[in-house]
Image (tube, rainbow, N blue to C red; front, side):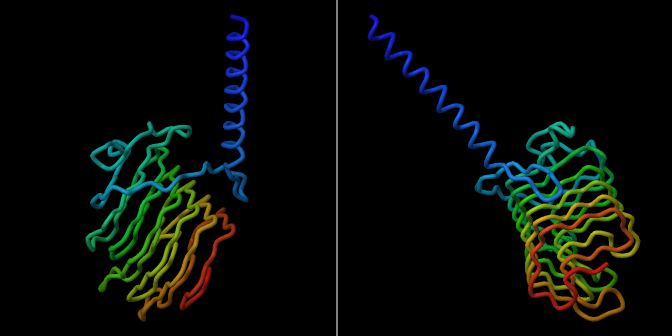
Length: 238
């Protein structure tokens, strides 16, 4: 009996130690960006195919519009995650507008749109994390700007660790456009650790060249540690 108790005690102590080690490793694996925001690690997950997503107010944050969890609070934002979104040559693959709830678009693969892979208009408290965005082609006519991520008239948006490549606009392209094409007013936009490559623009009265990051009519924005390459215009334009 005593021997059995000793073995049981040793097993319990071992489990406690391993549990503590696991917690320590998880805490250590989280990263903190230069703005002091801790970013939890994400693991590669197979993407589910999804059609274009359009959310036009807080009440649209539901399963029908691609939301898989969350309640819209700072500690538990609405979550759109792990989708492969084919824009089917629409203006955008993911559009979110006129919202104040906290939300995150994360770990999505987005392609085949004419204006923006991800488009935010008049939003507060949004985050775009670890998405792959490609094959964005500027449309003709009035819609002459294309962007991997397009943020307009918005406040407190985080754009972190996204891969944006292969954008071609008929009259100016931007890897990340933080202003809107014509009139914009953005504040407190954090653009951190994004990789932007192969951005090219065409000719015309609006834009005219590509830009890695294009900021216009916006204030109190922060840029950290972004990688920009193969741009036929400015890396950062403001």
